[in-house]
Amino acid sequence: MAVRAITETYDFPSRSRQELYGDDQLVHVLWKGNPLLCAAATFRAPRAMPFGEFLAGLIDPWAGSDPDYRPGAGRGWTLDGAAFDPSPEASLAELGVGHKSLLTFEA
Amino acid sequence: MAKKLSMKKRYSALTRDLDWTPSYVDPEKVFPYTSFEGIKIHDWAKWEDPFRLTVDSYYKYQAEKDKRLYAVLDGFAQSQGHLSLSDAKYLNSMKLFLQGVTPLEYAAHRHFAFLARHYNGPGPRFAALCQSIDELRHTQTEIHTLSTYNKYYGGMHSWPSQFDRVWYLSVPKSFFDDAMSAGPFEFLIAISFSFEYLLTNLLFVPFMSGASFNGDLPSMTFGFSAQSDESRHMTLGLEAIKFLLEQDEANVPIIQAWIDKWFWRGYRLVALIAQMIDYMLPRKVMSWQESFELYFEEQMLNGLFKDLEFYGIKPPRHVEHAIAEKEILSHQVYWGLYSFSFAAAFTTTVPDAEHQDWLRAQYPGTFDKHYQPLWDKAAKIQADGGRFFFQGLPQLCQVCQIPMLFTEPGDSTTICQREREYQGERYHFCSDGCQWIFDREPEKYVQAWLPVHQIFQGNCGGPSVPEVLAWYGIQDGDGGEYVGSADHVDWERWHAAAPVRS
Image (cartoon, rainbow over all chains, first blue to last red; front, side, top):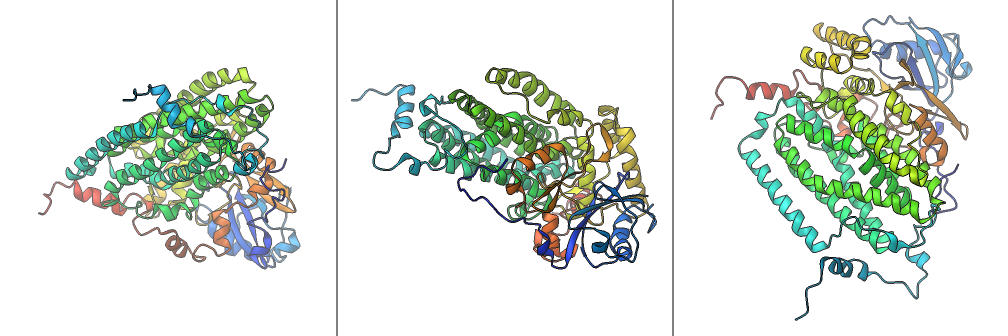
């Protein structure tokens, strides 16, 4: 269904489209099964950033909100619903992590 | 001398008799907004005015109420009434009210003024005019009522600009913007029916009873002064839906879809009330669950919707998900606010032992199992000299804009994640309800101003938390942890045994 509008041409760009972030993109990360972190986090990261850097520089400090978290403890990763085994050297783009992709892990 | 007109004639002369039929301009051009939504109106005169009110009697009546309210406000201020509140942290609920609800009153004032020009029929035009004036009066009296506290407590100084900027206030703002940017009939179903009728008791009763239980005489008096207006607005909402349903059978499926959409939009908005009633009131009124059962399940589902069956209207889509989460909603939302209150203009804190006992008694099936462990852990972090905060920005729902903290229907331990790809871009939703709303009108919701995404685009003052807080107009002492906050310290000082220095 489409918007019923007073004009024939109701068409506007997304306010979160990837081009607004330059060479970066948004990535959502959910720590499954830990209710202390009430929701997934959203990060802005360069598409060329290696996964290891993304993990150590962005995910670890956030997951460390829980004092019981040990850096790098994440396992059972998924990317947009599919099992995911990222190599730390590969970039987000190479791994297929896209704009507003959802990564999940358990710890 | 001319005889005095009867009330009925006088009403008719002062409202409907002021209407005329355009003869040299196309009516489509005079009223351009009332046809594109597909609603068919055959006879505008069938609109029954729920209240036969004229402008002069309206003003006289409202002036009386204002006089009483302002007398209470003066007395309260002169007698340092704020010192007899149940606790300074009670005011968190009124901070949320001032920041999140008062701007909605003003938005309603603006849009009802627009409708007072744009409906074809004089009946609904006049009803919209009266409501527009009511909403402006509510805005003003709420500001005056709460300014009593602004002199002494944090978090109440910059609410008009915060409404346009702060992350949690984008929830009410985007809700109302969604309604204002819809057509005039959808607005009526969104605001007058779904919000003012279906959900109004869930919204207003907790605030006003909370005020009465917690020594907030000004807000309680404001509540009484607004009550007769609110019941008029409720009656308008009911009249609006009956009028639209009776005008043409083709209107029924359109209205049903609007009820489905606006029930869920409104229900997600009142999640903020759920946490307020269970967690922010030092002296409790009733639990969210009780309030939902009484004001929604009993009065609306078992009452109103039974009456609407006659027109072919069914209870709102996804209502079963709302019912299923009534024992978990308030806990999830308050935990979320607790996690992010470093960026809020109100404070949060771990519920004390007595408060936890009350929560345990109210929610025997869920509190001990799911939420007690969270509070224990938060208390332990605090005892070790820290304070638990979510050190990052949350994923937001594209539709309701609340952090995606809600859980799967029937599984209160798994975060609900819904996703759609639209024109090559991913969008995420907190629930089936929000996803369904997006699917109906994706062109609308791709435009959402999501606070987290805006921060990342560099539109909110800068990349660091202090820069964003400065842009939000949040000052030291407005948010964060209640214990040790400026409000807490002042309150303790004002209530210390030592005499106040003259």
